[in-house]
Length: 514
Image (cartoon, rainbow, N blue to C red; front, side, top):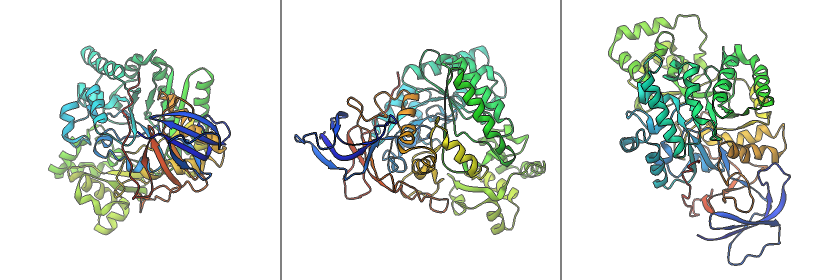
């Protein structure tokens, strides 16, 4: 491993302190010395002249879903090219290592690790991925692993087994416990079930991170529930992708801020994360009407595929008077090859091409046997700006790693961190925004020795032109690389360069949080 000396860099050290021109010496994996520019000697190190560019800690994606992609796309393309050096996975209550075997991103490896956090962590370590990965244990997959998709409370034995698996994950390095009662089967869980599981966090310093039960009609009640669950744990809460949607709930965002800030004043450690887009991205099935909304995805798709009567009943259920905004529902990605021509198109556009209604498009897509993901345009720019202005909101993509040639995704996969920066600096100085992308999330998830440029810290570093740091990724071309990133180092080694002729490595680690 070569030692490195960065010279002539404008150092933003991640603490929120003002920048200064600096030299930064790296020895092996860690930062050895930080000094005013021009004061350190080369002494055999590889010299990197920053030419006045900013040197920052590597960015943290606090809300990712690359549980399996860390293994199958170890180059980390979409994340590392933004300057991201660490991703926290296992969000929204989902952990691939406990997921169903069918259609799992881990592929055949799921047979070797399912239900075993330590075995999963070893697998990630062996993949030699570019990024550092920290992983939470998710409630939805934990519940499904123990009791399937049953709409009932757990038995005493089932609760004992869920607690045993969660305790094992926490003891073997899980970064926290994540919930997602918006999704199946978590929506079947009462608050008391989540509180009993979260109680295992007490004394660990690890957070409860959650996709709250509702980001719309019961937004405020759902934030209160999340705070109650976190209070049963270590009084430490991460609210995932903070938002208010759809349109008739936009006005609730200020009341949401008031709830969060009241909790902070009363002593709860609360952060929120957000991606800088007004289209969310999740499973198309989330707009399925009642009573079909409580049917798990595999069963739903199978029944639609096999029964014309079931398809007709689902179509009829759409006549419930709810506004679904099909013109703002864009197909993003699918494991079903026949869906690929629809990427980036709305259900209305697809219906016009096929001569059928948007509702019929929805049913037809699911009746193929697999459910695509979709982007839902349910948010507004005004609220997005308000959220990103808040000092307790950190950057999270809510996406997984994508290859550079993969255009079947939401633009947040490639553009979250530069767009977060560009919007947030309208309301805050560069140093404080960089803190929210580095040391603040690193401290939240106990990423020891990361998030700050100081002696003894790991050399996770991003060399970037902050004036030009931006993203042009959009829904038509979502895989455009971030602009302004000149080099990214992970654990002291070059992990990304925009120059394809430059050799890079995959020096990331599986971060086992104790």
